[in-house]
Image 1 (cartoon, rainbow, N blue to C red):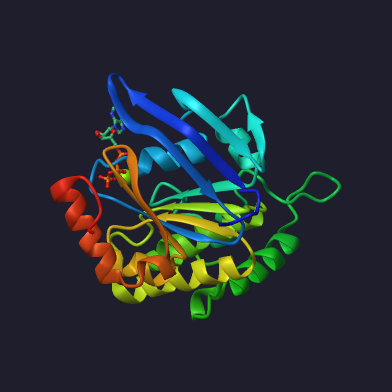
Image 2 (tube, protein in one colour; image 1 turned 90 degrees about the vertical axis):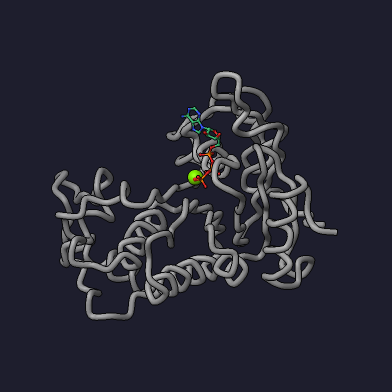
Length: 255
Ligand SMILES: Nc1ncnc2c1ncn2[C@@H]1O[C@H](COP(=O)(O)OP(=O)(O)OP(=O)(O)O)[C@@H](O)[C@H]1O
Ligand SMILES: [Mg+2]
């Protein structure tokens, strides 16, 4: 087992909407530098789980630990200051603005007179985009986001998260609605971010995608974790697909 202290741990956490437990007594940890693939059917509770991680929701019951310390007040600001950044598809960016503005929006780099330090922002944007694996012509930080492809937009959002010293970046369905080429770009970004030691939790409905990129898999069903396994334990994407089918039929993983 992993002996490290997790960056974040949900311990017996439940989130109820009215009398529905969207997340039901889940214990979930994220360790440093790992990519966790979160899977499960529509309505399984995946988005609710990441909203708990990112502080959008506080638990109805249960506890949250950040680097081993129990948190009493949990909200988005607290999650951010704990190094947890979330990238929400589409909602994340101001598409009529440039890449550089999007990366720094709301948290601009200022010089000592309080003016925006555009030169520094450009340098930083360039550095970040190289680091996460931007290679194409769109590399110019002055490009308007609307001119970028879907995968590249995700990259901008990831660069933004990285700039704010994220130790854990959460992506809710980053590749939905993307072509295969664009999906590959997002995965390259994710891989580079992991190389930097940052952890990733991501949701994807395509099991093959999840299998390729994650180190560990968590399958959620009706608010509960039904499978939690490393890639080595699972062994193949087909096995994950078998588990998903079996869960849909019987409520538990394949034998
Ligand atoms: N704001 C809300 N108010 C009431 N019920 C909600 C709310 N958000 C989610 N739910 C319910 O909680 C359950 C889990 O929803 P959630 O969005 O977490 O699922 P999901 O696994 O992300 O599904 P999908 O794959 O469709 O995105 C569902 O039954 C859903 O209807
Ligand atoms: Mg969802």
